[in-house]
Length: 250
Image (tube, rainbow, N blue to C red):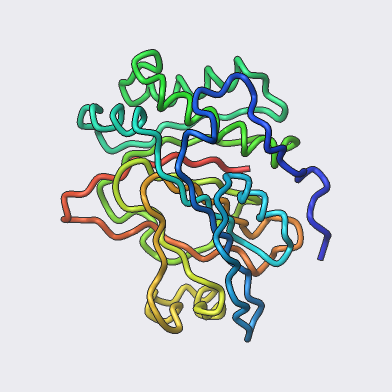
């Protein structure tokens, strides 16, 4: 297998002036989960308190890095004022090394596709741009697909792995993405398209909370074939729940 791409560089802990929310204003907890090779389940690492824990995804032995953050109160207030959004997926693309204006336009277009004006949502817009910036620092040479999705059904309910190199995901409203530690996964059942009950060897899936940021390796990440993070959307059909999630694929 190939070594991890040299373009996946270390993220600087410094914050660029374009950011609206300095990191020290956010209460954060971070955690990275180990990637267990077949037949092993290595222990997890202790939680940190910095968003730079997302750089843990650079470790060849990991397929998930998780920033367990609490959202800024201004952002929480903006999200609470959102109108009821129709279930749909807004999408955009960015070329490698896209400049700041291109990033800003892409995020504004996602919001506009949901009938929202970025100028009316400065805190949310700034947060989306911040996550995009962090992702681009980790994958500066890759084209990026952006998605802002409103979901009220059981889309992607089956456990699966992504045919991507790297994915960032953050759920702003509703239950977050569920995932399995590799020791819980029967990969043969997964590849055989068997039911979830056959894929999950034991225990229960873990679930991200609203506001948490996950970086997940997919099957196309260099050196990660057959070891992509196994995850799914939480089942919410007939619960009255609506999920609002932001996703970046590189």
